Structure formats: C-alpha cells, structure tokens
Amino acid sequence: MSRPAHRRPEYHKINKDLFVLTYGALVAQLCKDYEKDEDVNKYLDKMGYGIGTRLVEDFLARSCVRRCHSYSEITDIIAQVAFKMYLGITPSVTCNNSSRTEFSLILDKNPLVEFVEELPAGRSSLSYCNLLCGIIRGALEMVHLAADVTFLQDRLKGDRVTEIGITFLRKLDEKKYRRKK
Amino acid sequence: MSRQANRGTESKKMSSELFTLTYGALVTQLCKDYENDEDVNKQLDKMGYNIGVRLIEDFLARSNVGRCHDFRETADVIAKVAFKMYLGITPSVTNWSPAGDEFSLILENNPLVDFVELPDNHSSLIYSNLLCGVLRGALEMVQMAVEAKFVQDTLKGDGVTEIRMRFIRRIEDNLPAGEE
Image (cartoon, rainbow over all chains, first blue to last red; front, side, top):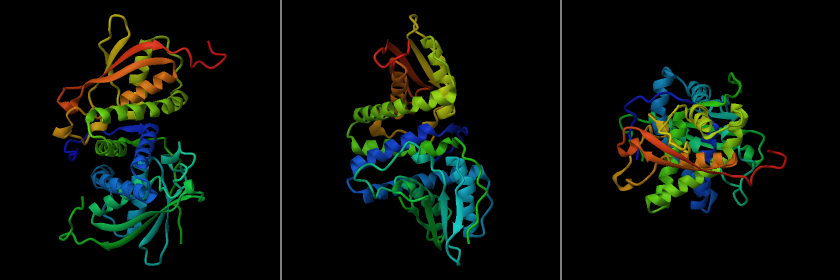
C-alpha cells in the first residue's frame, strides 16, 4: 500500500501524544492477533524493519549527515540526530566492547510508554517498543550495514533504564545486497 | 568506556514521518485481520474513539483553550489548535449548515497519507478513519455527541480530503458534580 515519497511532503513537527496512543493501539491489536509475546515481538520487529527501510531515505535527505567512518559515529548519529528528529529524545550512547562493534542506547525517557503504566497481565515478555529495534535494523540495512538490534533492559519490565543494544555485524557487500521484504 | 551524549531536554515535538509510517503499519495489520473494508473502517473508528477519550485531557492541558461557547468555536479550536498540534496541519472550516450544526474540515494535505496509495481491492477503505474516531471520542469527553465522517478523500481521487462534522446533542450525564 505504499510508494516511495517521490514528492517531498511538507515537514511537519507534531506533538507526540497522538502518535504514542496510536502506537499503543498497534501493539494492542498485535496482542489480539498473537498469543505468544515472542510472536508479537517478532512482528513488531518486522513492521519496524519495513518502516526503517523507508524512514532512512527521509532521514538522509533531511539530516544531511556526512558519510560515517566508524560504527561509533553511526551510533552517535542514531542517538543524537535520528532519535531527536523522530522521537524528540536523545538517548545516551555507551560502547560495550573493545572492538567497538557493540553499543547501547540508554533511553532515560521513552515517549512511547508515556501512557503505559505496566505491561498487560500475561504479557511479561512483551518488548513493547520493539518496533524501534526493527526500525534501526531496517534503516541500517539500507545503508549496507547489518546489525542485531534488541532491547537489553526495559523499564516496563522493572529494569532501571531502557537500553537498546546495537551489534554491528559484517558490512553488507553492496553488489550482493538484496532487499528483503 | 562510556560517554554521555549531549542530552538536551526532551522535546514534546517529533517529525511526523514516523507517525505516518506507523499508522500505515496499523492499517495494514487491520486489513490482514479483517476481511472487508467496512470492518477495518469500523475498527479504525473504534480505536480512534479510545484514543480520543485519552487525548482530550492532554489537549486541554497543553492548549489552554477555554470552554467553547458554541459549535463554531469548537470547530475553530479543532482546526486551528488540535489538528495543528497533532498533525501539523490547519484544515479550513467551511460549508456550515444553516442551522450551524454541521461543518466541513477541508484538509488540503493529510500527512497520514504521505506514502500511501490504496490498492485496487481496498476501494472502500477509509484509510484515515482513525481521525473520525478521535474527534468523536474527544468531543464526547467534553459533553458533545457528534458524528464525523470522511466525505471526500484524496486517496480516492478527490481533490481534497473533507471530514464532515455533525453536532448531534449535548451530553449531560458526564458532568462531574459541582460543574454547571
């Protein structure tokens, strides 16, 4: 049902609340559709992937970021530019290994959960914001970077912070790259 | 080995593209779940209603609008404040009925449909129907029963998108004790 945005739409800055509540409706709908948390999480990730592959075009066009030379730079841009642009927050970045391929985004505030007091009963393994992991993964893939992206900590599950882990894998060979559906 | 990114204060604003794409994912999921467009439309309206009854509190808190004295004021607030706040657009308010109980919101551009074409097998889908539910739910919380429906839609080839709003009646039951 989508086409590439060949015409540049106007850039709209909006208040987040309608988006946040719509996101909640999406998660609720998936919880009706799938009994197991793992399936909801997987589906959120898959949807996010599809979104990320499109969102990255918009991001690159608007942010004018220059080519990055390290995974560390890329992670900084995700945190300081992309999250800022699309969610109005700036997570902090930590590097988790000496080869500088594993990073964490620490979300002190997470607007997606503003109206969520706790996970629904029987949904203790739900990664409520898993759409974000898919978005990051899909966006990175479109710039030929393979990464595993997953929630390492989640305030909704009782952790102190919400932490997204990004592990960069090999650089995708541009010639062999096929876009996954 | 950690360093803090330059963390600014959280902004209440975001760019609309993520919302647009997430909304698309929601509609796509509903189209998988329900066989016919009418059921999807109904579900979007219902979801929108539940969103509207929550959203109105934040709207009233943030916007500082006072009580509206008539439906015309309400229309202006919806178009110039609410739509601006949550969708970044300002529809025009037109086509008032002689009795002043119906009007149209004309959206020249609708950010929800920025990346969208309706497939041929979904010609009855009211893609943005969530908005009608949001309007209905929000207004119910301020004691107004209304009907909201799309009468024109750029996704269906119309020149503009038009939402027709009709005032049904004032709801008296929900007034908390102590209010007039």
